[in-house]
Image (cartoon, rainbow, N blue to C red):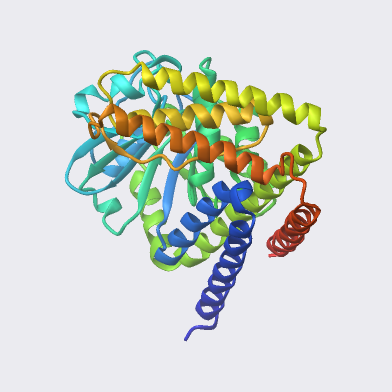
Length: 424
């Protein structure tokens, strides 16, 4: 076996083992780190399957959606003169189809002609419809080996929600097409976004768009300027630029071929580095969450009394709201979970998340009696869990000491994992 290939495989196994170690610790953290445990499980699955996600990101109106259509060989993304993409759009291999995934778990198949209704800033201002992401399928050769392609909202536009969505979803990308444009020098918005993105992605492809509108001489000067600046920003001399024109298709094949070649020869290295960065972020979030729980546990009884009284009032209000429903579908439970999560964060400053199950728009019809029973079960589980993990009014000294020791033990070991990831 080639020595470098053997090293890459060993490195991947090392990250996999460390991710599994982190997962065990996060599960030991109980509800305090349950969200991070689920994130780590997804990371492990992606790493084992070499399930790579390539995202195109950059400032708004750089031509991301048009370039995406060129790369995919299909006019699948809506394009326009105003900011179009206000929601993350994921494209996978398969027969041509489109479906919208909402934050409350609803999945709705849609026609391609209707996509702007959900992902256009004009039609869905500030994402008032609650779209989580849009999943498209197309039989593009670029995707046929399992690659997932993601088109993100542009950063820096008037629409703040677009920038926030782009920042949140850049964390999922394993490789990134960072799109620049010859009609504008690299600006501070792009620099800030690049600094954040490099904390998560394992590979970057710097594409320079709109080369059809400048002379060869001007293009050369622009690329030289960008290369020098990117070398400083990325702290490496190994910066390759891909001049393209999303309007004419010039240079797009070279970009596609570079990505596909890396997916053939370097995917383990890319996935290993991407997983390392994402795992580090997940562990850091878990440690921060444990600190929040620790702070909550050390609040005075008077403070906790008021907070628990407040969450009990909110839960009772949600129960009464549930009693007022007539036609009840299973999707109502997801809406309740989201509402409870928001209230816990508002009152306690800690993250408490439920699994949101995806389902068709109609969902399953439920009898009111069954629905109210499940509402009571969810609310009672939340109240009980909060009292347990915050040791509210816990009088057994042994239980208190054991809980503190368990949190300290998980925290110490997670910090050790974080330090190991930093050294890689």
